[in-house]
Length: 145
Image (tube, rainbow, N blue to C red; front, side, top):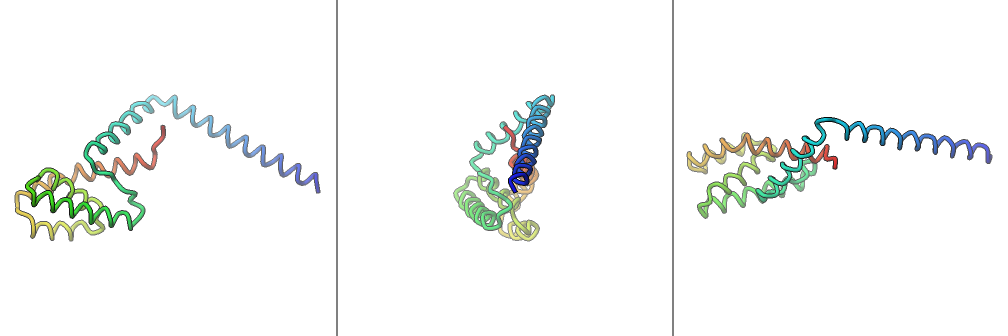
């Protein structure tokens, strides 16, 4: 019985050692990659820009958090547009469209409720906001520091 447990412990230690060696090897390989530092700088720059814009992107995998974020962004967008702050109002509405489950339906509603020039500005803003969300989610998935 003690021989089997010693053998099992030996195998477990061997597998753990191989795993740690594997981790060190790929960490060294990652750090020696010529694009590693530029990618890391880009991620940090994108993170700083997101913090400056004031919009914290939620975890898009949790539907409850996304719904809460969506409602918050629509409300903030409407309030800012009503107050005359077009730039920030459009930013918040674009964030809401970016996380919306049915963006075409939301855009139809917004087209009916917003003035045409404001709706046109919103359509112009959507690609950059979508790109920001895509970069933030990919950055969160592969964030390595």
